[in-house]
Image (cartoon, rainbow, N blue to C red; front, side, top):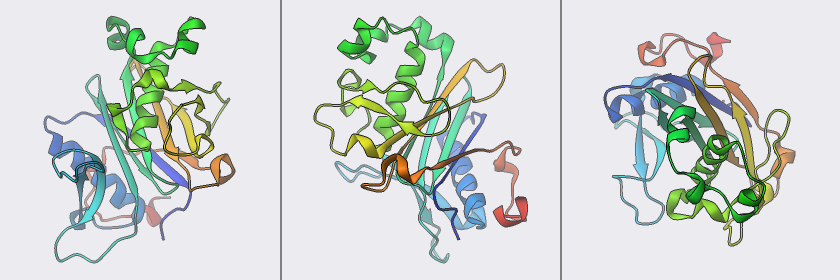
Length: 230
């Protein structure tokens, strides 16, 4: 049975190909579900046009394999690393950002809402990272102008309200939850993960963030699943 309410995140060295990074995401989901990683793959589907060449990643069964429980997936790349997320709490968006790369980019003009600019926001990388994660979780991506979003005050730990305002949002703001995580010591990366909670539950659903410290799951062959790994 899938771990209801849990959001699993792992950061690993980036692969030379997109397919290998997607295989890592599939292996992470298989580990979380106790499945053989050879039985699942990660596909994409655009919620707008239906294309399989881009869009939100999802876990698909390999032909001939048994159906599997549902899981929500997300993937991000930065600074030679890849971040993957598997959510059983609702649609998920994960983002990792290089602090140095953001510092070299003129992102303030495209990332900060008028209220954030008036506050002279210092944490530009964190704001950009959070907004990317939020827009992935809702399925909007950068079709929505990040300047339309104003972040809520940061919560001390765990998941909390993500946004103070978003005019025209397609979902209740109370259902968008955000948490920060550390991608790893010395990596100069920031990490944020957002979850679109089940409608009406909002922060009351209390998702649990779990950071995997396991070795790179690309090497996992399904010999031991989640149930035996705890």
